[in-house]
Length: 179
Image (tube, one colour):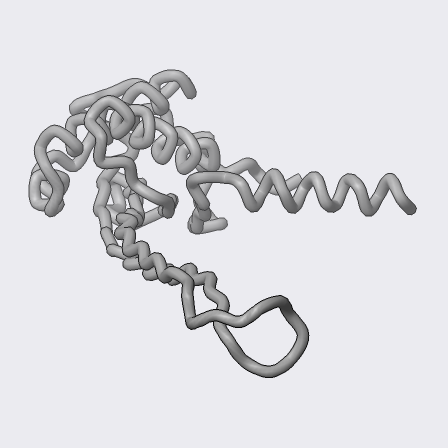
């Protein structure tokens, strides 16, 4: 029993510490093993409201991931890949204070009200990346992956964060056939 509780705690800590939370949805009637080639929906990706640098980072990471899974880029693809993004800001206000003063009750000595307050305001940016896989022949969405997490706006770390988002999302593609 102790071992089961320990394993459950380790699992909860591991899942809780992931920096990118992912999910995927797909059409369970589709045979994903039939898909071997892909291409990007460049006209649609061009409309996404992020910088061209980030678009190139995301599409490059997608292409590398798909090619590592054995997919081939083609002008006559089986599937088309599209992206879109959402961003939200979170403002955190923290107040720490410590003080002492006079009054009735237990304690030592007399004095006036002394102490300090410290306020801290931080802003975090969270982003969601959606990766859509569309059947090129039917023009129907067959798979959608979503990753949500804290963004890093520092250029060198941003590249790694984008790769992490894409890698975590596409780890679920193609979905495994039911046994």
